[in-house]
Length: 175
Image (cartoon, rainbow, N blue to C red; front, side, top):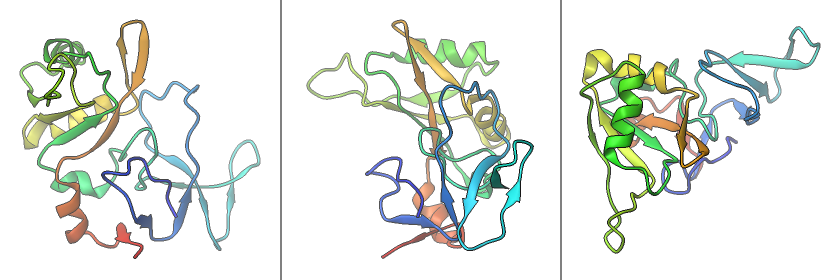
């Protein structure tokens, strides 16, 4: 059963045949094309260090989100970016995107009703179909430096639940 990243978005979902081991945050992951996965009841491969792992590129990774190699990104309409600092403003996140080489990305950052200075911890990005995968690749494994503290970004397709209905073989309800 996969580790659940957020009670709101992936509760009661499991991967069909793999168990995740969360990657260590100490590694600098500018791009992560493959993830170390441990298979249940399957023959295991050995890597360079001799530890038994199998390389799979489609499972949800706690703390990082859905990897760019996942086929669900092909049907995504937008990007949900989570784990934002509460005081991050749209202008600051827009500057972060511009430094990555993505100016003029349409975004919406919901604010809290009682404290409008604080966001809800996530932002929706709408880069368009042609730039969506490029932006996911650029954001994958990145950290947002805010108020002298790094915040690793968590990515998932904005329309994840409707994609799961179409691609039920990747993530399926466990109940």
